[in-house]
Amino acid sequence: MSSDLVALAARGLGVRFGDRWVLQDVDLAIRAGERVCLIGPNGAGKSTLIRCLTGIQAPTTGQALLGSEEVGSIDRSALARRLAVVPGQARLPFAMSVEEMVALGRTPWLHPWRGESAADRAAVNAAMRRVGIEGMRDRDVRTLSLGERQLVLIATALGQGGRILVLDEPTVHLDLRHQVAVMELLARLSDEEGLTVLAVLHDLALARESFPRLVLLDGGRLVADGAPGVVLTPERVRSVYGVDARFVHGAAAMAGA
Amino acid sequence: MTAQHVAAAPATRRPRRPIRPFVSVVVIGLCLLLVAGLLLGTVSLPLFDTIGVLGHRLLGLPAGTWAASTETIVMELRLPRVLGAMVVGAGLGISGAVLQGLLRNPLADPYVLGTASGAALGAAVGILLPVQALLLGFGITGVLAFLGALAAVALVVRLAGAGTDSRASVLLVGYAVGSVLAAGLALAMYLSGDDLRRIVAFLLGSFADVTWSQVAIALPVIVAGTLLIVSRARSLDAMLLGDDAAAHLGIDVRRERRILLALSALVTAMGVAMAGLIGFVGLVVPHVVRLVAGPSARSVLPLSALVGAAFMVGADLIARIPGELPVGIVTALVGVPVFLVLLRRARGAYEL
Image (cartoon, rainbow over all chains, first blue to last red):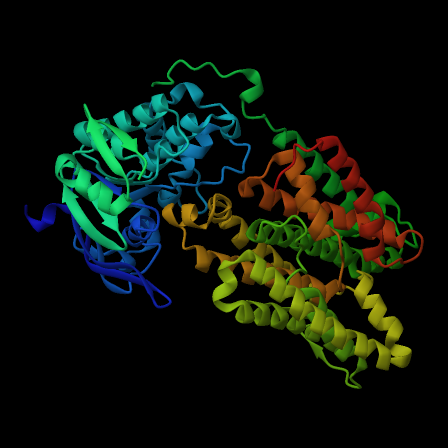
């Protein structure tokens, strides 16, 4: 693995809030085109790591890197053109159409006085097509189901035109069918288009099924990194989550601790 | 799952908003009100003479047979007055829209961050000082009102400090600073004796004393501030999705927030320096616009300026017909019932 292929990386990264370290000595390198899932119990530091890697939170120690550049040193709109984030919770306060929402993804490309160019409109259409929501373009975003809404948020992120997609719990509150739909979409984006995908998931079975590489955080430290079978051993699940787990045919059957 | 063939039911379609007819009505209304503002007042002027005066003085057309007093009234009194009302209305409308959006609070108005009390205290001090001075056409009252408004906002932003990220803390600090300044104003009023009437007049606002030299300063400042605010509408829209979501779309949220606060404070302070404190316009106009045009800042900001301008010219007209009422009384008496009717019609379909 040569370092110029690294899309996103943390190097000795630590974050302290007050006198509590929420992340410590995290080393992580995600190669371009890779699909990686960040897992770990509540409070493990997953969201904070995502916030560091996407330039919202400055690390206390170490570095968050986009390619070879420090994330915090990149201008916000330049960053938004290269890396898009699908937020866990987004307010959709407007009565706006799906198409208008996806067009917000063009924000980092737009000149304040000029409208959207033909290239912007083409990018918006392409983003909707890639996600398969062209049929919804005139829907009011507030009337969407949670699953549809998630697809629209992903299309908005794709409209930003970057090669890196970061998703914070993209399947939370979704039913099984929509969870699978989102996972299939992410697999297609990384396998067919070569996008780098980093997602936070809570559902270990879904993570195990859908991602070739898992990164497990616990108590602010990276405790395992690798293929699902290597990371999610019953012993480790017991020690990190405090529950006994068995993975049956790739699906998890959990018993209480 | 693919949603390729999801047919959108009519009820879930984005509502089509009648923005174009609305803009046409407001622009035509503004033009009619501007003309009416030149014709009507304590002395009513003939329409054709007024048009003749404008053509003569502004376009260099040959002079007609009108009375010299008509020319003086149109050019020296009414034209600066309607232009002043227009730009102050536009400035208050747009800065109300900015503050409601930034603070995500429907009760926010241009005066919410201490601007009103800062300006009022400045004006009261100016009125009480036994000094007369003129700076760029503004009396010491106007200059101190302008400085008081800006100083109050600067103080609020500074005290809120890192908490500028939190809407609640900005609002609370604004309220606290405003209260202290209001106490100062109350003290000034208590001590003012015969000048009390002038302080109260400032608090209620008026365009009766607007001069050309004031318009020459305020008009370019407010127009430029308004255009700069409109140019940042996309930032404000992105920020309505949440601060993190806006940052991920490439918006430097903290910087944009400060720029928008500064511009709206400047536009408000300029208006206050010229016409005193005129309430309700900055509160009500953006809501009326949202009821018609929806909440996207890209329509709300320019339309709030436009509707604010028309509303203020109209309010000033009503204020002077019975013989110079303070315009702030008219904006409340006329604006609030209209607003309540619109709000009732919207039946909960309204959101900030």
